[in-house]
Image 1: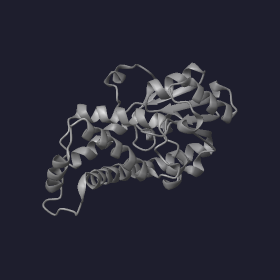
Image 2 (image 1 turned 135 degrees about the vertical axis):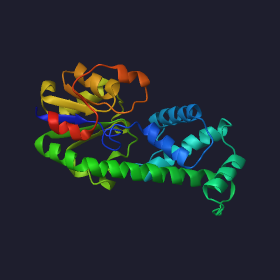
Image 3 (image 1 turned 30 degrees about the horizontal axis):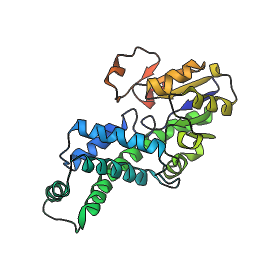
Image 4 (image 1 turned 120 degrees about the vertical axis):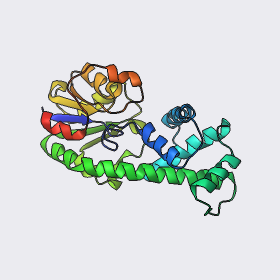
Length: 253
């Protein structure tokens, strides 16, 4: 093997844990009174919105990205009636244990909760990324590596913030190249940049349908990091090699 195509989101920055679950933990941390189903609807809406709307600035780091994502989710929940200004005020009073910050109006309330949840997500991502960094550095010294991710146009800024930009000769951000996983075309871009035959390249990611299957279709080998998935049916997929964490890649590579 000479090359690696690796995913970013939920592969490197959360060690296989789907980002919807990390964000949901932030909602629970704030005691926001929305159901998991309401949250999932807001999550889906936001990801579809950002896939076609350039709302994320290319210089945004991960914290700023999460502020924007959660802000859009909360606005959606307000529009759907799952939240209201009174609900946010009551929740803030409980969450702040009586020490209410000075906030004026719905926009300030929404921004406050978006900031808190974004902070939770940023701390989680930084911790996971720092744990993953020695592994990524090791394999990027051993192999030529391309990072391929469904992202928002600011992937390089996120990698710079987390100290990983130096590891990857090739960074392919779906928002910048105009094609998203699971379209095999985005993997073809990575294969062409690496310059190796597909059979000499490993594809690594947490989502079998988006990260592994399209690369295999082109002739690459795949390693599935089988963590928590958005689709519960994914746990029934029978595929090897699969690992439960990045650390186990040492055993294969």
